[in-house]
Amino acid sequence: MSTPSIAPYFAFARMKVERQVVHASAGGAMVHLAPDRRFRPRCHTCGRPGAIHSAHQRIVRDLNLADTQVWLQVRYRKVACPACRRVRVEDLGFVAAGQRLTRRLARYIYALCRDLPAEVVARHVGVDPKTVRAIDRAGLEAEFGRTDYAGLTVLAIDEIALKRGHRYMTVVLDHLTGRVVWMGEDRTEATLEAFFAGMTAVQKRGIRAVALDMWQPYIRAVQHHLPNARIVFDLFHLVRAFGQVIKRVRDEQFLLARQEDRRLFRGTHYLLLMNGDRLRPRQRTRLNDLLQLNSTLHTLYVLKDQLKAIYRERFIYRVRWALDDWIRMAETIRHPEMQAFIQRLRRHACGILNHGRHAIGTSRLEGVNNTIKVLKRRGYGYPDSRYFALKVKQAFPGTN
Image (cartoon, rainbow, N blue to C red; front, side, top):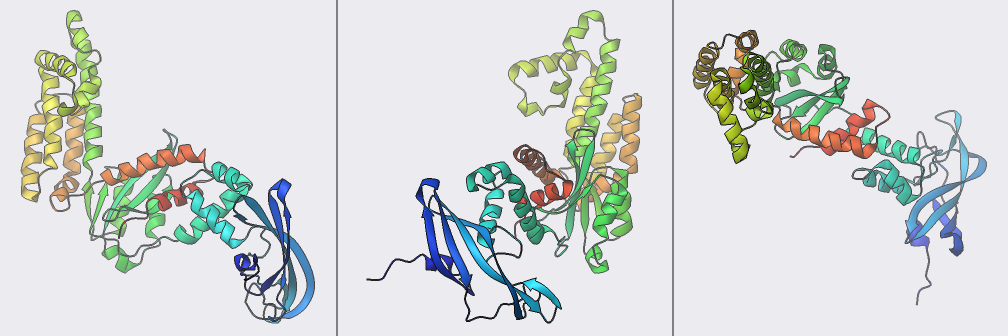
């Protein structure tokens, strides 16, 4: 019958277990480790063996054994490295030089941080929250810190609001896989310039299409760097912009209406913007009463649905016909907001027509936006945008 031993749980190369002390009342144990003298100490920087310079020891936290916290009292050496020409800490393998947590505990913490806030992980493991964040960030940098441009052919680009109306970040998504490729501060042309700066000429030529909203700084950056890519304007942003037209026309029609008819306008703003199949019977009745009263709003309501129908066409010539028909109907409304919207469509008609070639949009980024809101709440605010961007990339690694 073999004698029970804890040594197999601490099978650290070049080290051996000398003894252990269990403090049952404190729920902890101290395991004493010493260098295995069969091996020469190696420099932790270059990995070459060196002469022993001095001996030291430090306390390192390790993974728990069941409910018992485990601490390691590690005896180690400093070596005079002939390659580095400096005195270095020996390479212990299981713990990085100068660190107070083992690598396997750090990996465990990093895995927990994928799904839990740093404060929760800190309480669970019994480590300071700042240490948890540092471990999480180091793991994220190693896994997602480098921008991977490989295999990109179709992109979706949009901005997200970190604080409503104040701080924005630009998100670049691989439209085919759903992978968040890159995130950068602000939503300027210079922001996207930073993304394209890391791409080779071959990678830029490989991009076939890019889904955008009608944000001019993004358009200029894409046109400059991706000459082979077709820009496709997103339906969601187009409908949202038309919703602003509906709102302003409705407000004006309210002021022009007779006093006894104004009651029909109240509370109908969102009814005009909602999809018809989502209206409750009572809401549908209220909306119908308003549309029968005001022919201008009735035309706007029909135009809203027809605008979406343009994006259901799958051939470019049919998209052109649908867009021309829509503009002819819209021109019957003599309102400055509508006329400005029509001019905007004409200026960006090419990006709408391209939807007949590439049926893409930034709708996949809406899922990213929802997850970002959860990450912000779960993280109680991140210390900087770089850390936050890495968390988003981790949440959206894409599908192969």
